[in-house]
Image: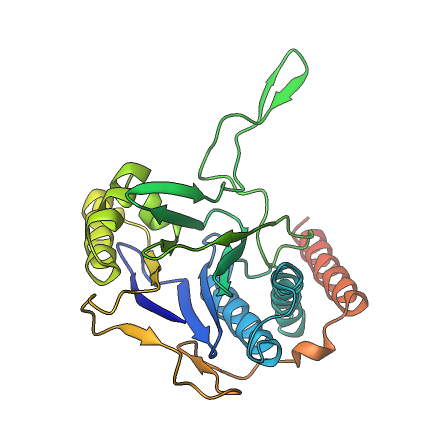
Length: 300
């Protein structure tokens, strides 16, 4: 397995950077992750980091050297990340939960599959065209004659995320067969909110990922101005030809079985991922909701 990868994250005009990204790989499988901690709620950066740590920890246990059931893994690991954030909030006695979007892709056996929750996006570019991209979980409800329509998108309103007391909605896509030169880009809304799809696709089509990604990020920051959002991108090019000159090319062919590499800070999770169960999470949610009620009663 051979690919080139480039990642970058910029704070923009915000006080802090709540985005997180990274990747892991074994001899025969690769995992690419990006999370955008949500403003308006506490510790968005913690939610994003917990999401990445939880999923990468599960991936390390499962990918030996491949993930047996990719769709199931993506679904289960996303929910485990959600549960971990909820438990963190409960153990800290927080009145509001940290929240984050998530997009994650696994590439193995010549195919790519991905999961996303929220409005962080994944693009697949092939031969100068956008093969596909994720659809944001955001909406602006319009009610006319008693009928609610969901056809207009408002990027400022998310109806799902990780860490919310309600169960997250997410989509799993794939497997999509990869072709030599295919490029997969994961990004936070700080990128696509300032650049249109045509510009993103054009840059990926005419440049290597190590050139396109920083150029796209700089363009997004310029367009966003002083109030620019955090801008975070991770992109990979599949099966880089031998003639493709890149200092960031990765070949896993020489990696021994059982070896796991990661750019994601390991950290120490507050609880073991094996100990996450629905009953415990329901208790955590109930405790958070009860604390919110008590706080509201005191203010009244």
